[in-house]
Structures are given as structure tokens and as C-alpha cells.
Image (cartoon, rainbow, N blue to C red):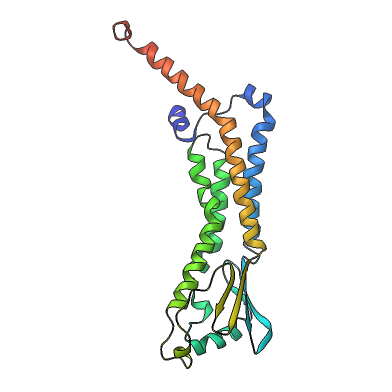
Amino acid sequence: MASDMEKLIGPRVPADELKAHRARYLTLTLIFAAAAILLVISMFLPYWSLTLHAPQYPQGLTVTAYVNHLEGDVSEIDGLNHYIGMRKLDEAAQFEKQVSLYGIIGVALLMLAAVFVHNGWAALLVLPALGLPVFFILDLQFWLANFGQNLDPTAPLSSSVKPFVPPALGTGKIAQFLTEAVPEIGLWLAIVASGLILVGLYFHRRAYKPLADAQKQAARAVSAAAQPASDRS
């Protein structure tokens, strides 16, 4: 049973090896734990914001996106968007907003589980957390494009605005409006967590690959010793 478990989650660290190189294994654990904590903290912080500059709003209108809701001048921007036929902002990414908190917690737990997996499966466990910032931006860009490309043709100013794709990051221009989209602290924390994961994967390989190689060599030696002499000749 123990052998089957080791095949699944990798070799266990011998007590003498752990005692001799405790800092090596502790560093790995702390890196993955820190990344998981950053992701959990990011859930409560804004991930992205967009400022709309319009002639009638010289100070600009800003909407701030958290992983599960929007804040800021949402109703004012919805009012402007109504005239060009764009749907209300809260209609975007409804499924993502509903599952985001549970999803991020699950991703963080997978990262902590990776500490106890001492083979290549650990990389698969941390992959969702590693790709979270990229997924957020790609999903955001999808919804911006979806809204900008599917304008209501019956809107009052529909004839004066052609379908468009607002950029998820950077500056965009829509008729006489200017948009500025920037990442916020929550997304930056997720990016830092991704960087920590890459560092953690380096330490993971450094710590456990020698043990895995030794385990494979021992298995081959046992297999060779178990073969009849006629088979070995």
C-alpha cells in the first residue's frame, strides 16, 4: 500500500535527509504557503479598474472590478452605455463572479496540497494558480469584446458608434470617449503569487528529484535481482 501511495505522490523524505537539509524543504513549504495566502488576500481587493473620460465628466468615471462584484461609477457608465446600445456592466461574467471566491480558495488549497506531493503531479496542482492572472485578463477581454461587438441596434446613438473592442489593459478610444484600464492590487498580488509558484517549482525539483531518481534506481535494482539468472545472462 505504501509503495502504491509513493508511486502516486512521490517518495517520502527520509528522517536523516530531512534533518540534514531541513531548510531546503521548509523553504519550499513557505513559498507555496505564501503564494496561497496572497491569492486568498487578493479575493478581498480590487483586481482591475477602468476610467472613462467623457466631455460631460471632466474628472472621469471609474469602475473597479473585484473577482465577484463591481464598485464605483457603475450606474453612471451604464447610463452612457445605454445610448450606444451596450448592456449593463453587471451582466458580464455572472458565472465567474458567482464561483470566483470558491474557485480561488480551491486553487489555494491545491497549492498547499502540492507541498505533500513529491513528484511531477505537483506542477499540475499549482497550474491553476499559476495561470489565474492570465485567465482573469483573458476572461475580462472576452467580455469587453462581447459587449462592444454586440451593441443594440435600436439604441438612440447606435448609428454613430460602430462595434468596438475596449482593451482590457491600456488606453482605448470609443467615439468621443477615452478609456484607461489598469490592473489593481488584487491582480498584482495574484501575479506575485504566480512568480512565487515558479520559484517554488524550482525548489520542488531541487528537493525531490534526487529522491525520485534514487527511488527509481532502487526499484530497478530490486527488479533486476528478482529476475532468474538465465534471464539476466
